[in-house]
Length: 194
Image (cartoon, rainbow, N blue to C red; front, side, top):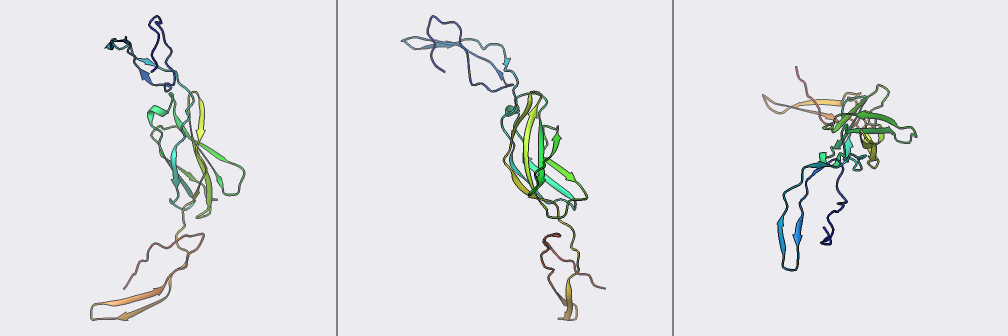
Protein backbone atom coordinates (compact mmCIF):
# COMPACT_ATOMS: atom_id res chain seq x y z
CA UNK A 1 0.00 0.00 0.00
CA UNK A 2 1.13 3.54 -0.60
CA UNK A 3 2.46 5.60 2.31
CA UNK A 4 0.00 8.16 3.66
CA UNK A 5 0.98 11.64 4.84
CA UNK A 6 1.53 11.86 8.63
CA UNK A 7 -1.19 14.51 9.03
CA UNK A 8 -3.82 12.23 7.45
CA UNK A 9 -5.89 10.00 9.71
CA UNK A 10 -8.13 8.28 7.16
CA UNK A 11 -7.54 6.21 4.01
CA UNK A 12 -9.68 4.42 1.43
CA UNK A 13 -8.56 0.89 0.65
CA UNK A 14 -9.40 -0.12 -2.94
CA UNK A 15 -9.30 -3.24 -5.13
CA UNK A 16 -10.74 -5.51 -2.44
CA UNK A 17 -12.74 -8.60 -3.34
CA UNK A 18 -16.52 -8.45 -2.88
CA UNK A 19 -18.18 -10.35 -0.02
CA UNK A 20 -14.92 -11.13 1.78
CA UNK A 21 -14.10 -10.44 5.43
CA UNK A 22 -11.09 -8.19 6.01
CA UNK A 23 -9.31 -6.79 9.02
CA UNK A 24 -6.89 -3.88 8.92
CA UNK A 25 -3.82 -2.67 10.82
CA UNK A 26 -2.04 0.67 10.69
CA UNK A 27 1.74 1.00 10.91
CA UNK A 28 3.48 4.30 11.63
CA UNK A 29 6.81 5.05 9.97
CA UNK A 30 9.37 7.84 9.94
CA UNK A 31 12.96 8.36 8.79
CA UNK A 32 14.23 6.03 11.52
CA UNK A 33 12.04 3.06 10.62
CA UNK A 34 8.69 1.37 10.98
CA UNK A 35 6.92 1.01 14.34
CA UNK A 36 4.75 -1.74 15.72
CA UNK A 37 1.42 -2.35 13.94
CA UNK A 38 -1.85 -1.36 15.59
CA UNK A 39 -4.21 -3.99 16.93
CA UNK A 40 -6.37 -5.46 14.14
CA UNK A 41 -9.60 -3.69 13.36
CA UNK A 42 -12.86 -5.57 13.81
CA UNK A 43 -13.67 -7.88 10.90
CA UNK A 44 -15.51 -6.10 8.11
CA UNK A 45 -17.16 -7.82 5.17
CA UNK A 46 -17.23 -5.99 1.83
CA UNK A 47 -20.55 -5.68 0.03
CA UNK A 48 -21.74 -8.37 -2.37
CA UNK A 49 -21.45 -7.93 -6.14
CA UNK A 50 -22.43 -9.79 -9.29
CA UNK A 51 -19.94 -12.66 -9.85
CA UNK A 52 -17.45 -12.01 -12.64
CA UNK A 53 -15.56 -15.32 -12.90
CA UNK A 54 -17.15 -17.97 -15.10
CA UNK A 55 -16.67 -21.71 -14.54
CA UNK A 56 -13.77 -23.34 -16.37
CA UNK A 57 -13.11 -26.75 -17.97
CA UNK A 58 -16.55 -27.00 -19.57
CA UNK A 59 -16.94 -30.56 -20.80
CA UNK A 60 -19.20 -33.56 -20.57
CA UNK A 61 -20.57 -35.99 -23.08
CA UNK A 62 -21.21 -39.64 -22.49
CA UNK A 63 -24.23 -40.57 -20.45
CA UNK A 64 -27.15 -42.65 -21.61
CA UNK A 65 -29.27 -42.43 -24.72
CA UNK A 66 -31.34 -39.20 -24.86
CA UNK A 67 -29.02 -37.45 -22.36
CA UNK A 68 -26.73 -34.47 -22.63
CA UNK A 69 -24.20 -34.47 -19.77
CA UNK A 70 -22.53 -31.11 -19.06
CA UNK A 71 -19.69 -30.72 -16.53
CA UNK A 72 -17.58 -27.81 -15.27
CA UNK A 73 -15.02 -26.85 -12.63
CA UNK A 74 -16.87 -25.20 -9.71
CA UNK A 75 -16.08 -21.57 -8.84
CA UNK A 76 -14.22 -21.19 -5.53
CA UNK A 77 -16.00 -19.52 -2.60
CA UNK A 78 -13.84 -16.38 -2.64
CA UNK A 79 -14.95 -15.69 -6.24
CA UNK A 80 -18.69 -16.17 -5.67
CA UNK A 81 -19.08 -12.51 -4.60
CA UNK A 82 -22.27 -13.01 -2.57
CA UNK A 83 -25.00 -15.22 -1.20
CA UNK A 84 -27.39 -17.24 -3.34
CA UNK A 85 -24.64 -18.44 -5.67
CA UNK A 86 -25.43 -20.93 -8.44
CA UNK A 87 -24.84 -21.81 -12.08
CA UNK A 88 -26.65 -20.98 -15.31
CA UNK A 89 -26.32 -23.71 -17.96
CA UNK A 90 -27.13 -22.81 -21.56
CA UNK A 91 -27.11 -25.21 -24.50
CA UNK A 92 -28.44 -25.59 -28.02
CA UNK A 93 -28.05 -28.09 -30.86
CA UNK A 94 -25.12 -27.12 -33.09
CA UNK A 95 -26.48 -24.82 -35.81
CA UNK A 96 -29.56 -23.77 -33.83
CA UNK A 97 -30.16 -20.16 -32.81
CA UNK A 98 -32.29 -20.80 -29.71
CA UNK A 99 -30.62 -21.48 -26.36
CA UNK A 100 -32.16 -23.69 -23.66
CA UNK A 101 -31.42 -22.34 -20.18
CA UNK A 102 -31.29 -24.25 -16.90
CA UNK A 103 -30.46 -23.03 -13.39
CA UNK A 104 -28.41 -25.17 -10.99
CA UNK A 105 -28.86 -23.68 -7.53
CA UNK A 106 -26.27 -25.80 -5.70
CA UNK A 107 -22.90 -24.11 -5.02
CA UNK A 108 -21.08 -27.46 -5.03
CA UNK A 109 -22.57 -28.68 -8.33
CA UNK A 110 -20.26 -29.48 -11.19
CA UNK A 111 -22.66 -31.38 -13.46
CA UNK A 112 -26.00 -30.95 -15.19
CA UNK A 113 -27.82 -33.72 -17.09
CA UNK A 114 -30.48 -32.79 -19.64
CA UNK A 115 -32.81 -35.65 -20.57
CA UNK A 116 -35.08 -35.53 -23.60
CA UNK A 117 -36.28 -38.44 -25.77
CA UNK A 118 -35.92 -36.29 -28.90
CA UNK A 119 -32.11 -36.07 -28.55
CA UNK A 120 -30.51 -38.32 -31.12
CA UNK A 121 -27.36 -40.20 -30.07
CA UNK A 122 -24.02 -38.43 -30.52
CA UNK A 123 -25.61 -35.10 -31.45
CA UNK A 124 -23.31 -32.06 -31.08
CA UNK A 125 -24.46 -29.27 -28.75
CA UNK A 126 -23.01 -25.83 -28.09
CA UNK A 127 -22.75 -25.30 -24.34
CA UNK A 128 -21.82 -22.41 -22.05
CA UNK A 129 -22.00 -22.19 -18.27
CA UNK A 130 -22.37 -19.00 -16.26
CA UNK A 131 -22.79 -17.90 -12.67
CA UNK A 132 -25.26 -15.89 -10.61
CA UNK A 133 -25.90 -14.79 -7.03
CA UNK A 134 -28.47 -12.63 -5.26
CA UNK A 135 -27.00 -9.55 -6.98
CA UNK A 136 -27.66 -10.88 -10.51
CA UNK A 137 -26.26 -12.98 -13.35
CA UNK A 138 -22.55 -12.81 -14.05
CA UNK A 139 -20.15 -13.96 -16.70
CA UNK A 140 -20.70 -16.88 -19.09
CA UNK A 141 -17.93 -19.23 -20.19
CA UNK A 142 -16.90 -19.44 -23.82
CA UNK A 143 -18.82 -21.95 -25.96
CA UNK A 144 -17.79 -25.62 -25.90
CA UNK A 145 -19.12 -28.37 -28.18
CA UNK A 146 -20.33 -31.48 -26.34
CA UNK A 147 -21.95 -34.62 -27.75
CA UNK A 148 -25.08 -36.29 -26.39
CA UNK A 149 -24.95 -39.88 -25.13
CA UNK A 150 -24.49 -42.83 -27.43
CA UNK A 151 -27.02 -45.57 -28.14
CA UNK A 152 -26.42 -49.30 -27.80
CA UNK A 153 -25.23 -51.06 -30.99
CA UNK A 154 -28.15 -51.71 -33.32
CA UNK A 155 -26.66 -54.67 -35.19
CA UNK A 156 -24.97 -57.93 -34.28
CA UNK A 157 -21.48 -58.81 -35.50
CA UNK A 158 -21.49 -60.91 -38.66
CA UNK A 159 -19.25 -63.65 -39.95
CA UNK A 160 -18.85 -65.45 -36.62
CA UNK A 161 -16.80 -68.63 -36.93
CA UNK A 162 -15.19 -71.03 -34.51
CA UNK A 163 -12.03 -73.11 -34.82
CA UNK A 164 -11.04 -75.83 -32.38
CA UNK A 165 -7.44 -75.26 -31.28
CA UNK A 166 -7.19 -77.91 -28.54
CA UNK A 167 -9.25 -80.33 -26.49
CA UNK A 168 -10.22 -77.45 -24.14
CA UNK A 169 -10.06 -74.29 -26.31
CA UNK A 170 -11.92 -72.83 -29.27
CA UNK A 171 -10.92 -69.69 -31.15
CA UNK A 172 -13.92 -67.53 -32.11
CA UNK A 173 -13.64 -64.76 -34.72
CA UNK A 174 -16.08 -62.25 -36.33
CA UNK A 175 -16.15 -59.11 -38.46
CA UNK A 176 -16.13 -55.87 -36.44
CA UNK A 177 -19.21 -53.66 -36.36
CA UNK A 178 -18.47 -50.47 -38.32
CA UNK A 179 -18.58 -47.10 -36.56
CA UNK A 180 -22.01 -45.49 -36.81
CA UNK A 181 -22.57 -41.80 -36.21
CA UNK A 182 -25.83 -42.49 -34.40
CA UNK A 183 -24.76 -45.31 -32.11
CA UNK A 184 -21.11 -44.45 -31.63
CA UNK A 185 -18.03 -46.57 -31.28
CA UNK A 186 -18.10 -50.18 -30.16
CA UNK A 187 -16.05 -50.49 -26.97
CA UNK A 188 -16.11 -54.27 -26.71
CA UNK A 189 -17.74 -57.56 -27.55
CA UNK A 190 -19.20 -60.36 -25.45
CA UNK A 191 -18.65 -63.95 -26.62
CA UNK A 192 -21.27 -66.46 -25.48
CA UNK A 193 -21.06 -70.23 -25.84
CA UNK A 194 -23.40 -73.12 -25.09
